[in-house]
Length: 464
Figure 1 (tube, helix red, strand yellow):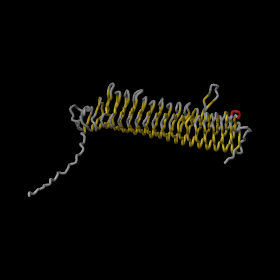
Figure 2 (spheres, helix red, strand yellow):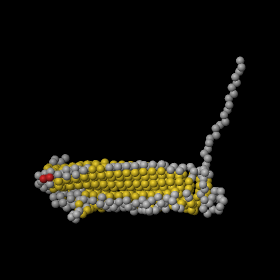
Figure 3 (cartoon, rainbow, N blue to C red):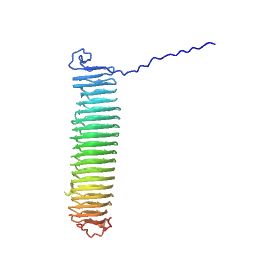
Figure 4 (tube, rainbow, N blue to C red):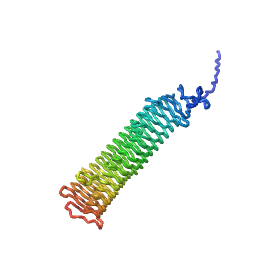
C-alpha cells in the first residue's frame, strides 16, 4: 500500500487595513502662484479635488461654486470667505462634508445639502433664496450666523434631520428655519428681524432656548407636527406660538407684546407649564380652539380681550393668574370682554383662578359650556367673579368676589351656577339671575359679609 503524506501549510498573519488619512492642503488667497498645498507653499485657490482632503483656508475671498468629494473637511482660519456672484449655489454638498469657521456669501443658495453635513462656526450672508437648504439628508451644526436679504430663508429643510446648537438670525428673513416632513432640533437661538423664526409642517420640532424679537408674523408655527418648546423669550410678532392639528408642549416661556395673541391652537393637543404672557393684543393671552388642552400654570397680564379663551374642545387648567385685562369698546362705546377665563361650547376643569383688575368677569361661560372649578378668586372686576349664560353651567367649590362693579355672580340667560361656598363683597348685589329665562343659582355656605337677595331661582344647598 502506498502511504499518503499530508503536509500542512502555515498561513502568514493577516495585516489589518488601516484607514488612509486624507491629505492636508493649505489655501491662501495671498500666496504666490505654484504652491503645492503645504503650510509654507499654500495653494492660491481652493482646488478641484478628486478625493477627500483636509483643506485649511486662510483669510481671503474665494470664488465658487464648490463641490467636494465625500469625507472632505474645509476649515477656515481668520476671515475665509467663499462666495458666488449672481445666481447658483455657493457650496453643493452631495457627499458627506464638514465645514468649519467659514463665511459663505452670495448666490441664490449658500449651501445645498443632499448628503450628511456638519457645520461649525459658519456665517451666511447675502443669499437670494436660502442660506442653507437640506433635502433628504441630515445636518448637524453649531454656532451659525445668518444675515440675509429680504424675503429669504435661513434654513430650509424637506424630509431632513436638522440639529443646530447656537444660531443667530439677523435681518428681514421670511423664515429663520422652515421645514416640512423633517425632524428639527434647535437650541440657543437668537432672532432679531426675521418675520417668522420657525415654521414646521408635519415632522417634529424641539426648541431649547429662544430669544426672539422684531418679527411681523408668527414666531413659532406648527402644522400637523409635534413640538417641545422650552425657555422661550419672545417679544412682538402677531402670534408668539401658533399650532394647527399639532401636539405641543410649551414650557418656561415669556411671551410679550404679541400684536394679536400670545399663543393660539386649533384642533391640537397643547400643554402649558410656567408660561407668562404680557401685553397681548385683541386676541388675548391664549386661545384654545377645538383642542384637548392642559394648562398647568399660566399668567396673563396687561392684555386685551381675555386671559384664556377655550372654545369647543376641552381643557384641564391648574393655576390661571390674570391681571390688568382690558375689554374692547363695542359699537355703543361700552366695554365688552376683558374676561379672565372665557369658555364657549367647551368643557373645562379648573383648579384655581386668580384675577385682579379686569374689565370683564373672572369666568365667563356661554353657548352650552360646562366649567367645574375649585377656587375662583376675583378682585376689582367689571362683571364679577362669574357670568354664566345660554345653557351653560358652572360648578364651583369656592367663589370669592371683591369690589365688582356689577353683580358678584350673574346668570343672565338660561344658565346654572352651583357654588358650595360664596364670599361676595363690594358688588352692587351678590347674586343676579334672570329667573324668567330658566336661569338658576344654588349657593351653599356664605360668609358673614355676604348678603343673598330674594330670588325665586336662588336655592340653598348644604355645604360640605
